[in-house]
Length: 86
View (tube, rainbow, N blue to C red):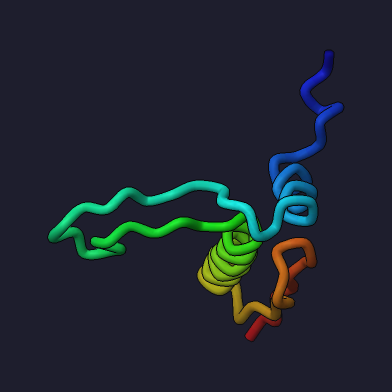
C-alpha cells in the first residue's frame, strides 16, 4: 500500500481531532522541578491540533518575514501566507 493513501500527517491529525477531540492524545508525566507542567498535563486531540496550527502559522510567518518582507498569514496553517515586499 502507498503511504500517501493515508493522507498527510496534518490531514490525519485534523481527522483524528474531529473524531476524538476531547480524548487524550498524549500526556506529559509529572516531574517535580521541571520548568513546564511540573504536575503533568494531558493534551486532547483538539488542543494538539490548535497547537500545531498556531506553531505552524508562526513558523511560516517567521520564515517568510526573514526572507524578503513582512508576512500576511491567516489564522490557520491550512491557508497560505503571502509576502508584502518593502
